Image (cartoon, rainbow, N blue to C red):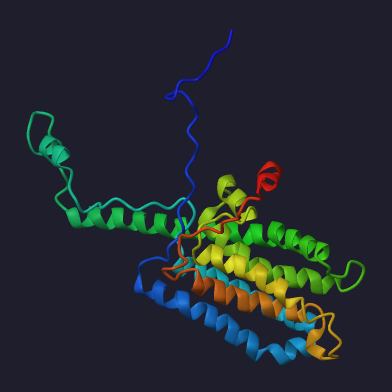
Length: 279
């Protein structure tokens, strides 16, 4: 005996979350362009110190990068699980009708201003908490999950295994703050989104574009390391981190252009053997 689910009973696949838009506030729109330029400027300003003392400089710059990234996500990005707030200024006609007439009418306070101040204070605290909770979550997961994962990936892609371990971890921490912090802030731990992230299938936006740019930039940045130019800046992981910062800035800006925003990377499937033979 076989049973089949009707179309109404079949499980509905959850739609993919849409691309993330920068918050509409003017401050958010302006700072979303200032932030990548600011990071690149600070990196260029400290580049000589990075070449001279990589470990000390990477460690000293890490708190400032974390602070700037957390400021960016709070000012410019919608937190995970956020939804457009209902307009509380529009009165409910049914409720007002019930309260203004009938034997069950409820007497209202004669000081509406006081009631509005109390409700406004609660809404303000809820908005602050809605920002702080994803911020703490993104920073914690970036530090304790994304950084070790990226350190392992760096080793798998050719970073030294028995030497330069501190440099590898610090490079991974910088890359995690650049790429993972915004992703975790806006998407939380949504499994569907993270499957798209690992599958390089997210629609283009400032968050996904900056993360993808960080990875691609780091990959291209590794090219000068084995070349026999004998330059001090070729030491691991300077060129990798330089490429990551440049890729972050370019990806953040380019992915917001009308030609790229919302588009997905399309991988062309390979032809079957039978089709190749017929051709």
